[in-house]
Image 1 (cartoon, helix red, strand yellow):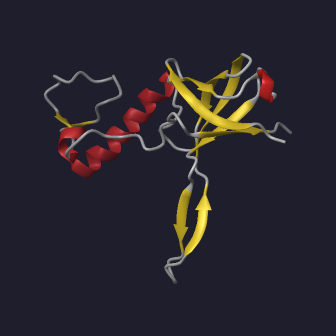
Image 2 (cartoon, rainbow, N blue to C red; image 1 turned 30 degrees about the vertical axis):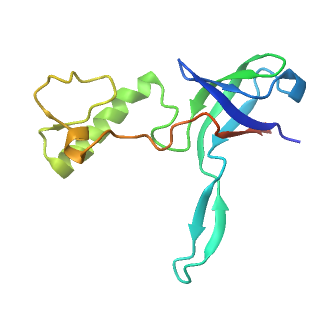
Image 3 (cartoon, one colour; image 1 turned 135 degrees about the vertical axis):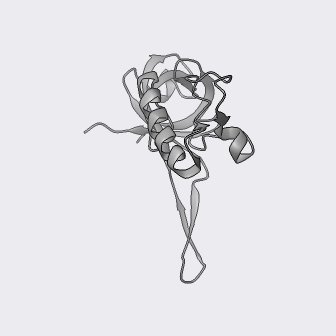
Length: 152
């Protein structure tokens, strides 16, 4: 049976703490997928009826440290273009977003919030243009569900 638990803490450097450890069968090297515990409800476009819920995997993580009741895992990738992106991927993602938003809103708009552009560059900030802070809805949060991914 696959180990299931929840994210208990978000740590720096792309690491999370899972509320399952050695006593629950967790071992170093195990892989977990992380998703919102409630899932996302899906509606039938023809009838308007609910079809049920689906899980949207936010990220995957590999266990690096195991204690009796908890495990530390490093985020490795994600099911969305934002979650679990390493530092090397931020520059490329920012360039792609800059190109897309430049086409949509004009070349004077700068993508901010990635720690890559200074705020005093003189360009209009995308967050200001859209009327508030950009939120990464795929971001891993305390309370998200985790489930072991069985290796084949």
